[in-house]
Image (tube, rainbow, N blue to C red; front, side, top):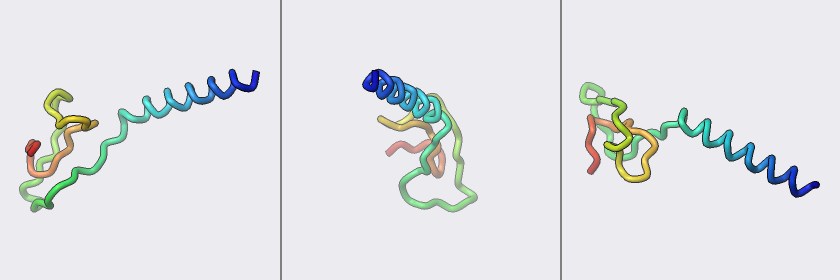
Length: 64
Protein backbone atom coordinates (compact mmCIF):
# COMPACT_ATOMS: atom_id res chain seq x y z
CA UNK A 1 0.00 0.00 0.00
CA UNK A 2 2.82 2.37 0.84
CA UNK A 3 4.52 1.82 -2.53
CA UNK A 4 1.27 2.62 -4.38
CA UNK A 5 1.04 5.93 -2.54
CA UNK A 6 4.64 6.77 -3.49
CA UNK A 7 3.94 5.98 -7.15
CA UNK A 8 0.84 8.19 -7.14
CA UNK A 9 2.78 11.05 -5.53
CA UNK A 10 5.61 10.74 -8.07
CA UNK A 11 3.18 10.71 -11.00
CA UNK A 12 1.33 13.73 -9.61
CA UNK A 13 4.63 15.58 -9.16
CA UNK A 14 5.72 14.77 -12.73
CA UNK A 15 2.41 15.97 -14.15
CA UNK A 16 2.65 19.19 -12.14
CA UNK A 17 6.17 19.85 -13.41
CA UNK A 18 5.19 19.18 -17.02
CA UNK A 19 2.20 21.49 -16.72
CA UNK A 20 4.28 24.25 -15.13
CA UNK A 21 7.03 23.73 -17.72
CA UNK A 22 5.02 25.52 -20.37
CA UNK A 23 5.10 28.72 -18.33
CA UNK A 24 8.85 28.75 -17.74
CA UNK A 25 11.10 30.40 -20.25
CA UNK A 26 14.81 30.65 -19.41
CA UNK A 27 16.69 33.85 -20.03
CA UNK A 28 18.71 33.90 -23.23
CA UNK A 29 22.39 33.03 -23.09
CA UNK A 30 24.94 34.78 -25.21
CA UNK A 31 26.38 38.17 -25.77
CA UNK A 32 24.61 41.24 -24.46
CA UNK A 33 23.02 43.53 -27.00
CA UNK A 34 21.94 47.14 -26.82
CA UNK A 35 18.32 47.72 -25.83
CA UNK A 36 17.54 49.44 -29.12
CA UNK A 37 18.40 46.21 -30.97
CA UNK A 38 16.68 43.82 -28.59
CA UNK A 39 13.87 41.90 -30.28
CA UNK A 40 12.55 39.12 -28.04
CA UNK A 41 9.87 37.44 -30.09
CA UNK A 42 8.19 34.11 -29.76
CA UNK A 43 8.27 31.87 -32.78
CA UNK A 44 7.31 28.36 -33.78
CA UNK A 45 8.84 25.59 -31.68
CA UNK A 46 10.28 24.12 -34.89
CA UNK A 47 12.34 27.32 -35.31
CA UNK A 48 13.97 26.93 -31.89
CA UNK A 49 17.48 25.59 -31.34
CA UNK A 50 17.77 21.97 -30.26
CA UNK A 51 16.50 21.26 -26.71
CA UNK A 52 15.16 24.80 -26.23
CA UNK A 53 11.84 25.40 -24.52
CA UNK A 54 11.14 28.75 -26.14
CA UNK A 55 12.50 31.27 -28.60
CA UNK A 56 13.27 34.26 -26.39
CA UNK A 57 16.60 35.30 -27.86
CA UNK A 58 18.45 38.62 -27.75
CA UNK A 59 18.88 40.71 -30.90
CA UNK A 60 16.36 38.90 -33.05
CA UNK A 61 16.16 35.30 -34.15
CA UNK A 62 19.80 34.27 -34.35
CA UNK A 63 20.44 30.63 -33.53
CA UNK A 64 24.21 30.48 -34.05
